[in-house]
Image 1 (cartoon, rainbow, N blue to C red):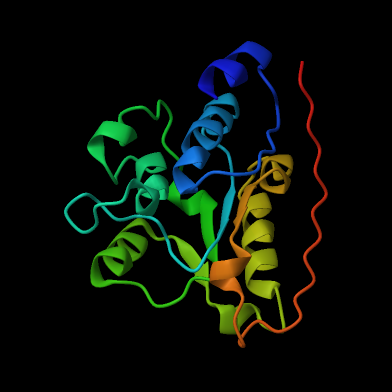
Image 2: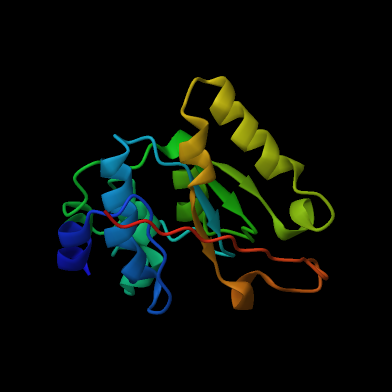
Length: 171
């Protein structure tokens, strides 16, 4: 995937398939392309910020890797780390002690399924705040959105319409 991305140098990337680790390369590329100003809306029940000490599956470390934490071997492959202030969790459920510590220490915003069940204002407020801090709003609109409906969907999230508008431009 990395060779394909480097060859085509896209400004936006859409792909389907694989486990969470497949996300590291394109998110890392886009964050580097946009000088560390990529906003990331992480829609998942889990934050994926564990380390090899807590968990033995890499898919639970991918966001940690992108933040410069996680698995040191994979984190070293990320040239420009994500700014944790530009990451928001949507649909995040109960976290482990280690995950909670990382989220709090890095000051990452989050909204539970209950927070989002009837109202998306937590996400919209985060987007507005990013704009008000003079970040380029377009980078927030191009935020990477990870959606795992099998993890997020529960009785607390009834009838949520999901609309994907996908733009892919390759130079």
